[in-house]
Length: 89
Image (cartoon, rainbow, N blue to C red; front, side, top):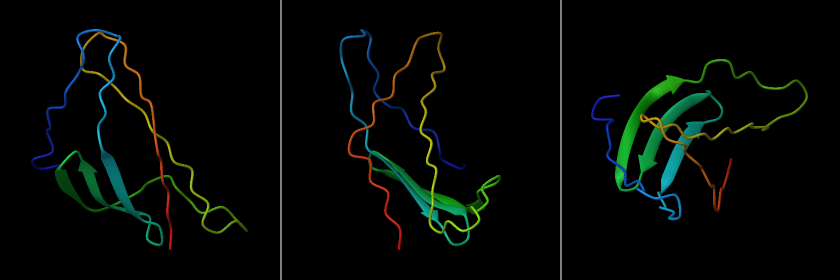
């Protein structure tokens, strides 16, 4: 993704938490990624298709979201989700 790199704060100790704002916009009719926001940076995802996601038979509007965190250093990482909202029209 062009200009997709973003430096985020991290902790030197395990006893502190940092909060980051994250938003992902998905077109559920076309199964495409539309936009992503992390903190104040908004990135256009170019309506990239979501591969491997097929609608369930006889169940309309079902979504199976997945969230994870990774590090680029040999350290452990934790992800705590707070106030997760999934809305669909």
